[in-house]
Amino acid sequence: MTDGPVVPPASARDAALDLLGVGEGPLRIGGVEARVLARDFGTPLYAYDARAFRAQLARVRHAFAPLDLLFALKANPSLALARIARASGAGAEVASAGEILLAERAGFAGEAIQIAGPGKSERDLREALRVGATINLESEGEHARLRALAHASGTRPRVQIRVNPNAAQGGARLRMADASSRFGVDRGRVVAFARAIERDGACTLVGLHTYGGSQAFDATAWLSACNELLATAHEVEDALARPLDALGFGGGFGWPVYDGDPGFDLDAAARGLRESLAAEATPRRGSIELGRWLVAGCGVYLTRVVDHKESGGRRHAILDGGMHHCGAAAGLGAIVRRAYAIVRADMPRALGDTPVTLGGPLCTPADRFAKDLPLPSLAAGDLIAVLNTGAYGLSFSPLAFLGHPSPAEIVCEDGHAQLARERGAPEDVLRGQR
Ligand SMILES: Cc1ncc(COP(=O)(O)O)c(C=O)c1O
Image (tube, rainbow, N blue to C red):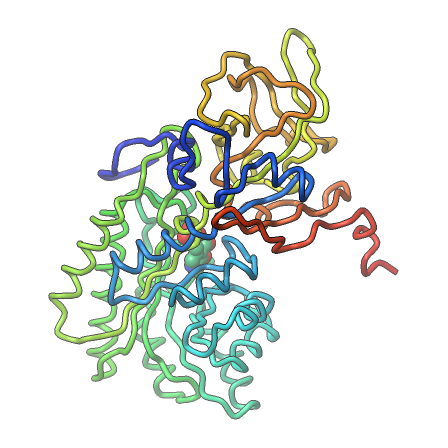
């Protein structure tokens, strides 16, 4: 899975429980016992620890200072969390008009917002122009569409070229750069593209951007991508005979969600990038963008056992939540299906010896969180927590499948729990239908 040196494998369960500050007692999120959250808000639900999120934001900002940190809203488009990121001094990385509206509501403005993503719609681009976001261009065609809109609106947007380095980033589980890619402009065409943007004059080319992939566990491979971006910047600066103002080095740092996942060596990455930047003659503004590393461990999906039975010699616990809320934990997007760190909420550190297969209420074999997972024995009514689900939890789930309501989202801090997003209702299946 990884191609270079990484920090040793971690227990995904311990990574989450340590971040949440849970010792030997029951699971608490932001100082609120999971049992109390389930009692007061019902299940299934997502709970996020605000203090843990702040700590993750601060840790990255401190390690990478003076670079800017952008919180990738796609990892968790909760307004409450976006506000916390904003208050911490981070910017927002967005991928759609909707995420721009969310960023704006959370207080991000202008340059603090960067939009990336292939296939940006006219509305996406219009909203980006309206708020003055920096636009990461994915293709020459996108530049043509943007320049027409910019002309019509009398604006001159700041743009960066997203560079596809033509090689996959080692150690990234989800790769978004390659010899041929939907993302960015192939490195060999970047100089010509930069010249064309400059000549055209409808947009201000402020810099370059790259993003090699998500669940990137190899800091050395990520640093190679950063150095390649610097080399590309030199070529562009030579061609334009002027320095670039900004470079977006991507991110996608890995966070352990399966046992045996390595950690990401944040300090080595920060040190390496600092060394590379110290050798640069040109001072430029730099940024990194992260979603998962910041928020995955801060979130927990809580679901209750509604039924418990034996079949063919196996124990099955059927939950009130499932893949429609927590797709990644059911294997969505994974090549190999493995269990997330799943614990009994009243004894999260207890090692179990009763293998149980955990599945949700959906009529599909895909709705399964674990097969023969050793847990302390379960009965109907027990509360189960799927850890490390603060990133790409609800936002990466087939919510429309089978018409179950969306879960509530709760933000917890210092023993207080606050409803951040209301639970959906069965009637939601009819919304917008004629
Ligand atoms: C352009 C871009 N930036 C940032 C991110 C966030 O990545 P991660 O959540 O792995 O940190 C993504 C994720 O797909 C992305 O595509």
